[in-house]
Image (cartoon, rainbow, N blue to C red):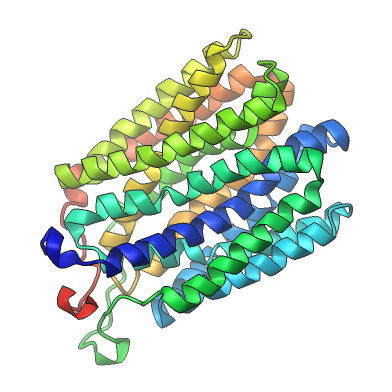
Length: 407
């Protein structure tokens, strides 16, 4: 397929998938940026505040594979739009019960369950609408959604929570998710594929006899540890240890996520040119190790350089997601990609949900520098697990229908 033959519709589907995932990412990230308010003004320990911050990720872990299976069966449109509508309802419930931490946590778990819908479904949407030689770019753009959502939460949630209250911070997600639910219901068109009933043979399970997908899952599980160590505790580190004002620290973390989102595009284009997702993934893993060790070194002193180092480390820590996500969808194929992407994200979010309370506890015992070292060692463990470049260069086509059927 040529650049001209691609047309406008794939880019429109990409935009809707991007904004849908950004909306749910903002909701999922909001509790993490309430940690200063919960810890400083409401008296919660870092471990307890970290547990509340992990409730949305726990919800995602519970639902990602199930949403992926539904998307494999019925397509992407109603999974994405329905999940966004449920996310708006959950955010409204959280805004209503901000003073009751038990009920608040329950609504945040529901928010994570609802928000999980857009992750495998939007990944399927992008891979189904784009040819393989453009998927690195397309998936890099789509994977901007998570850091963009985190960036929006970083820019908006701390000052809003401090000035207007936690309930108002959640109501922003109510509006964002609600509007996107309507837009996606109207605008999304599922990519064409041969119906299950018309297939000559049942689609093969891509996990049988091949450990490539499992290795990619394990790599992503390990690399998400430095990513969420930074996104969960980077703000409070800058405030409490590096003595930055709350508003400035929020801007630094938001800027880091914003730059990181464009970094995903860059590595996606790089992977398209190399014809492999795995070679760049190995280099990103090594860079993550180095960046976390640098954060540990900087954490030993109070210095303005800390803000710059956090931006560099945060940019590197999110760069692997699009590479791994695209490779999983390509290898799994059109009839397994929802479940495979669900499994991919389940592992990541399970790891992320552990990072909040565990890293919070570790910070309380050994401090920030050694916690950063520990997360860097997790990234180091990922390096030998990255599959060889040849394992993903000829992944299963994303669709069994000729591209002309998509127009």
